[in-house]
Length: 470
Image (cartoon, rainbow, N blue to C red; front, side):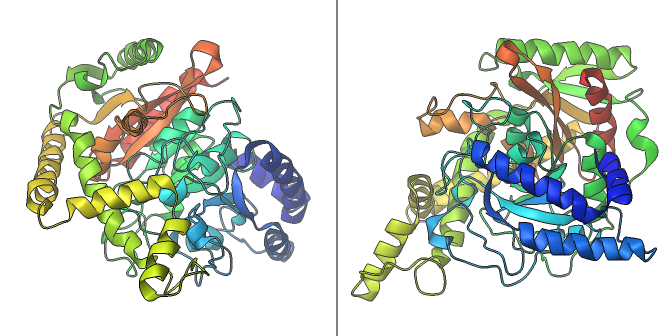
């Protein structure tokens, strides 16, 4: 898709493209509510700058004139960053984050900040203060979350690429529900500088794109060490190569039996087995594996993540920035009313849970034990990757569900049950669209690799993409 758009930019100019994209975005916003803030005037000025460089015979970069969208928890200087919450409704970014900066240096044009579950807490896009995002493929169904707007912006054709953030699966799960590609990289491979923190030890900026090739290209441009981010790995970034087209011959791939149980939708199971047979026919070795600790991953995540959420969101107190309750008379009332009115129900629930977990009576019994289980999960993955190259599984146990269909928070959390384990281990993983099932609902297949195995993931993802290309 990016190559096609670059040809259009070279022939017609970036300004002409942005004009067309702006008209489409305004129309799709009415239908899907994919954005919280549009930056179309700024995009037009940026396009004129790129056209000037092109007319002067200069190279603006590998993404010259390519429209992109940013999840609204990423800082973009001078523009609003709301995190989908009332408490940050009128907060403006004081600087631009590293990943966004790298996109602009490559010539990309930001057209807007996308809708999201409030503070990235949710799996359906329904918790945003600015209203839910609709799935462009099925407007009566959720787009997934929390990167709902970014996935919808790509699925609707507004942009070929968008940035999101993935904690428990917030890039891969909406990618699966919207029928697009979604990559979560190795923890620390993409700088988190400029990303509003949810659970700092798990959060990663990820890429949503219309194809595997586009995903790999964007990843190559924004990965790499960043001295501004203390969690950034001191490694060179990924270098794009032709290996993406090498196929799967010789790869050793495992399918965890824990992911193929009774909770998995029967037609998704059939699709995974169908792909497994095609992998074998193409020369890959596919076998069943077992990762017993996966059964503890969901509980572990919902101890560690709320604890970090409670700590990170303590800064929103009505004093330093964000919403302040106007009727408060005392300092205590200001704290209480600002947070009561500023946060939505899901955010409050997780803050209360995390505060309880970190209390003196529960810290050792829950939080420290969860950290030990997390270490066990990491070691289990390391052991299995000593004998195989990739893990192959469904991205989600079900296809996208209808709005309001899932009300129980525990049932909602199951939407991320297949993506959370690799997040806890800090491993790279990608959701790839693999056709559709009943009622033309999209299905995503997940590939998980060991640390820095993104090139192998892209190689296998491209093979699967070819199977279902229309």
